[in-house]
Figure 1 (tube, one colour):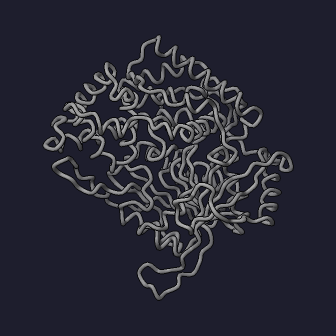
Figure 2 (cartoon, helix red, strand yellow):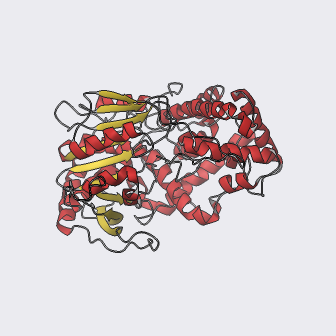
Figure 3 (cartoon, helix red, strand yellow):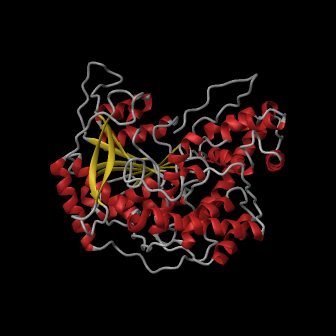
Amino acid sequence: MRAAALYSAAGSLLLTTLAAAPAGGASVVPDTAALQGTAIAAARARAAGIDFGKCAEAQDMPGALKCGTVSVPLDYADPNGKQIKLTVSRVLATHKDPHNSKRRVPGQGALVYNPGGPGGDGLYFPLVGLLPEWKRIGAAYDLVGYSPRGVGHSAPLSCQDPKRFFKAPSQSPTNPSESYKKERIAQAKAYARGCSKRAGSALPYYNSVNNARDLDVLRAALGEDRLTFMGASYGTYFGALYATLFPSHVRRMVFDSAVNPDPEQVWYRNNLDQSAAFEERWTDFREWIARHDDVYGLGKTAEAVQRSYERASAQLAAEPAGGKVGPAQLQGAFLTAGYYDDYWPHRAQALSEYLKGDPKQLIGQAAPVPGAAAEAENSNAVYTAVECNDASWPTDFRVWDRDNTRLARVAPFETWDNVWMNLPCAYWLAPRQQPVDVRTGPGELPPTLILAAERDAAAPYEGALELQRRLSGAVLVTERDAGTHGIAGGPNRCVNGYLDAYLLEGRMPVRRAACAPHREPQPTSRSRKATPQPAS
């Protein structure tokens, strides 16, 4: 799933039992030719290694961060055909015990990380080793990030001119008219055509199974016999594919905020479930604002806060703030708060000040940043291509309309925006895959660790339960009564304790464990300020 801290609004992964099953057959295991091609590419990468040097766009980054490239086949069934280069980054293990400067920490190889998406870029992940919560892990592991295929400098994918990507101000109706639906259908068809035209014959090869194969080639290029991997959000999905396809190549795996891997869920139903979950998280946020009405003045109940939000949206529809922030930009900013509660004080303050006549904070938080358009367009293109390629989607808009009209009656906050984000998949011009049946038997896979927040909206909790059912020996650690998306290395010391014990010592609970929630964010205002909680 897309990480909202990096990619505002728009994208999601999503999930619900309201929908009809997407068209398509049963799940199948990928073809033998591609698996053989992966072995050939991995052997080639191991022999070549990675020549790490200065990062091309890291002028202001610490000198310890180094970058290199790994070549992978565009098509694994043709390993000697066209190759693409993935950009990889690394910070070497410090071997310094943060609690005992005299103790040298033995190395445990490379820890490879993916932040999710599809379309998320993990190139700067190794810099987390500078944070206190990561210093023990950074002492033992070489921290490795990379840009997946299609992302950043790794054979970048594009579906439209980045100058046309940000359309602001724009609308975000929770009960769209028929004319508005027709307009969005036309846009979705045009976007699908743009992806096909710009990517050409390469388009079908941007998919989750190839992301898993790329991970095995990266493992070999790093000189690792077995992979230590941490994936967040969507990264848990192709990490689970990796565990299914290459179980003997796994050393340790952490699945942070797990996506539901059930083939019947990928991706249409997953998106429906996410829309439903965001409604619950939006309620959590409104209740928090109401408890701090003395600070924000937006209402003493969640219903009153909703009315304040709707009043702001109506005002923005009539007169966009700064000419840039309309209802869709407001919704995008508040959707981000559904991912990370450390955004709550800032979003609430911006809404409060806007309704009192001062739009500056809202404009600063919600307006598109033109300089980010190329990166955002690239991320969106990869997100769309991977999800559309991965599985069958309903091709009749009447199915989307029926399922989401029904869902929007009880979950209006995110539902229709999620539809427009994913609707190009209804008109996709590349062949679809059938999702792999993620599953391992007893003894096939080393113990793996799943981390999940109970009220995560972007990756609903059922996904973590389903992943544990499918990966034999997996252990689940739950942060109760919390909804942050991505909890590894965040503010919860209990969660971090389980993470450290697993990655550093291979220790974990027998099957399941629970942690109390991290502390709620404290309200901030011009007269009452507090340090926001760090994002996880």
